[in-house]
Image (tube, rainbow, N blue to C red):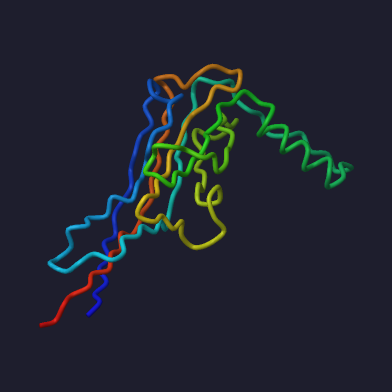
Length: 178
């Protein structure tokens, strides 16, 4: 007989400024393989929600783009992209591992700005990994985050980055009925 068990877990990790340049493992599939008495045949982890709350005070403010009525759609797009990728910023690099963090592979990056007029930003990190409803991590999977210096220094103590979300641990047991 097969029996499937699910546990919903909350993820909440603050990235300390002292370790920002290192890859910080934020989630890994360490699903309990002892089970409830049966033999575990599958242990999976499904990340359902993954966001980053950022409050970057150490950088100069990134101003809202000066979009004019006569600007073409392409010009408007370039002005917005220039704010994201040419303003003072740090990069949040997202990594995935197939061996529980022994080797990391870059999955995406985004700019961390000090937005003019807003005290913080919230990013959907799911978009860096998948277009699906969940990031599926097998028995050896892990996700890591790194804050990179791209010419504007490193994360400072006045900055705040919190990675938060939820995931489901799922494991399947085989029971031998005697």
